[in-house]
Amino acid sequence: MSAGMLAVACLVFGMSCDRAGPGDGGTSREAARRAASQPARGGESGGGLIPAIDIGASVAARSLVPLSEYDGRIEYIVIHVPDEFLEQLWTPMRDLLAALPLTAGVSLICNSDATCAALSSRLASAGFDSRSGVHVRRIPRPMLIWSRDRYIGAISAVSGESIVMVPQIVQNFDAVRRAAEREIPKLLRQFGASYGIADSPLILEGGNVLNGGRHVLVGANVMRENLGRLTEDQTRAELARTFKPRVMLVADGSGLPPVSHIDMFITVVDEGDVLVGSPRLAGELMSTADESSRRALDERLFIRPDMPDAKAPDFSPERCARFDQVAAALEREGYRVRRLPYVDCRHGDFIVSYNNVLQETIGGRRVVYMPTYGIPALDEASRRAYESMGMSVRPIDTSAVCHLLGAIRCMANVIGRGTSADESAGGLP
Image 1 (cartoon, rainbow, N blue to C red):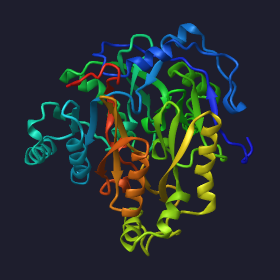
Image 2 (cartoon, helix red, strand yellow; image 1 turned 30 degrees about the horizontal axis):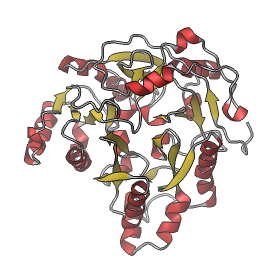
Image 3 (cartoon, rainbow, N blue to C red; image 1 turned 90 degrees about the vertical axis):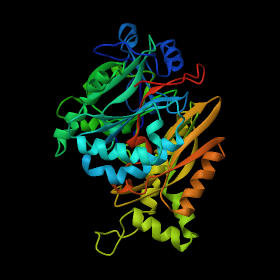
Image 4 (cartoon, rainbow, N blue to C red; image 1 turned 45 degrees about the vertical axis):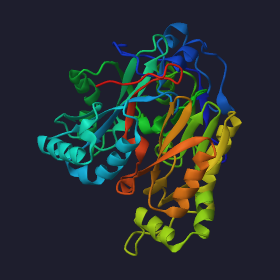
């Protein structure tokens, strides 16, 4: 593949799931029924870069549909609260709990009695102890704060039942914690949560998977991450057995996404509309920004005299082009693309993202839980962008955790969701 080619590929898909256990249906059932009614089509290849794989009806009938990014009411969220991160997580957790409807179920997973007690005390002081759907759970396992990455909420395309997909992990310095996090969905069932568990041979993180409606969007770096365990052909085939509808591998001209997780720069707004992060737009906004915005941006990106080069937000033409290439590729696949401010430095070492959001639809009204960073020029421009699409914006202050390379969607893993059609209330324990 030449550097000038956009490495964006579509696969035709089905799925493989160890077991589809009982679920209480807190997921996007209507989307599953729509996906199940669309047979896999042989002979397609988005962009012509990866040939289509016709898995066959028997496998396609077992497909998983990742939970919608926007349709229906959020029913069940899981947030990890490791001992060492309670202080940093408290502000975004508090803001999110205050903004969510009372019907949302939230499990806050701590790994020690001390953190459970400290968190419970803070919840009581903030008035959340009366929320029947908010539970502090002790699961004595090492964990990281980004619960989204280790397990993926989905639904059976056949039955519409709740499924939690648990992929494999990268064997790196954090392998012990990552392996322990894979156990959390199974351990949560001791508290009454009801869903099937689908183990996967793929190395795949939830931040790199988005349900785009017409496609399942997956970062193309999934191919590289699975090398050594699976050949490229095996990875393609396993993706094709795992998800439905088609998978679109997202990358720029380099063959990789500009950031390792696509939810940091892509927001699926509905089946035809996406928002793509734009360093170019952010640079234009910052060129006329006030001093408080400039100072706050440097703080969020950890820009200071003693940091390695480059000591500035990366608004370079080369960096902007990578995001523009992704936007163009999505447009070629039929999406209507709008842009949001996005800023990083040192090729994504530190990131300010307004794409990493939660969304829901309540009574026909669209709501977005949007990260804010105390950067007035960018916070307000992003708010206006969502409001221009008819959304009610609920700001969540993520400035205390953004240096850890994530925001709202990374922190709060939605594994139960109703539909706008059924307007289900309540949720899992």
